[in-house]
Amino acid sequence: MKKIPFFAVKRQHDGIAPELRRAVCRVLDSGSYILGAEGRAFEAEYGRLLGSRHVLGVSSGTAALRLALKALGVGHGDDVVVPAMTFIATATAVSGLPLTLPNPGSGGTRHAFNLFVVRLEDRDSLAGHLAARGIGSAVYYPAPLHLIPAYRGLGHKAGDFPEAERAARTGLALPIFPELTEDEAGFVCEAVKSFFK
Image: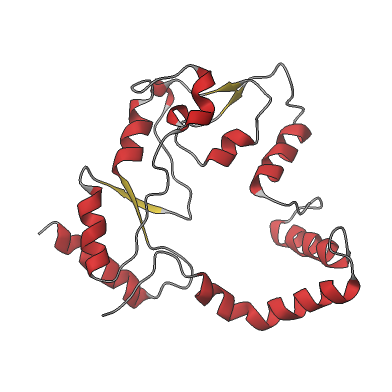
């Protein structure tokens, strides 16, 4: 049976493995694991790619969000609005600041470009249908922020953000990654279409 993973990190790694090994060896040989020449070279190359004179490599997406907020002068006393349907790190980045979830009438859920999410009431049946054909899928955000225990203190309850709750209940992410072949993408499409026949 053909197997199409939800995400294929190994395929991505295999394509750049020799370059990664050389870079890791350069870092190990230098003894500079942070703030060294490799980090500066990455920042310069990424800056050229972006057309920006100022680029900083940081340890995580959360650190990047915190740095951006600080650069914008956001601090205590400022309200920070985050989407109700997002990765928890979006909210974690603003921990310690007054956090506000947007009014449900202010717009729908948007998904990042690295996800291809379909929505249907019976998503578990579609996931099973795909799995039976060797196709991986995933539920990325099983709960919106306001229903995650860490954010109970915001005072929201089920029903406060109905569209985010519906997206959490109905969303199923399909395979999408740079190394997914056209043949594999076609196979996934045909499998999804066959579910609805």
